[in-house]
Image 1 (cartoon, rainbow, N blue to C red):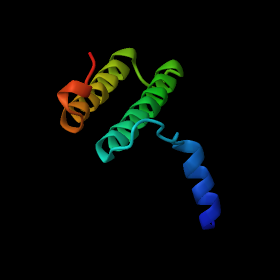
Image 2: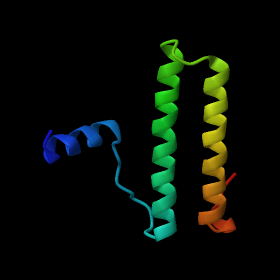
Image 3: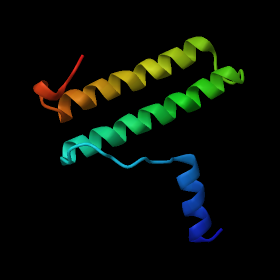
Image 4: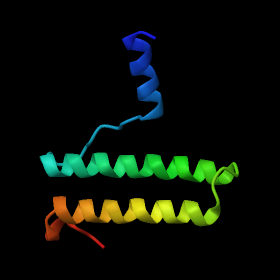
Length: 84
């Protein structure tokens, strides 16, 4: 497989939307983390829906991802920019 096909496959499996907010490196990183969270939740729900993963296991995995995202937000964004 040549490089172009690999890039196309990667873009299909891991799409990224551009960031439209006020540019700050930490906001850009958090946005990337948020997109990754959403993508992984989509994969987990698809596995659960197709019967490849139990509901309990899907819940545990999503909960772990959520905790990582919350930690990322806490580390990257100042308190005044964090909304409940």
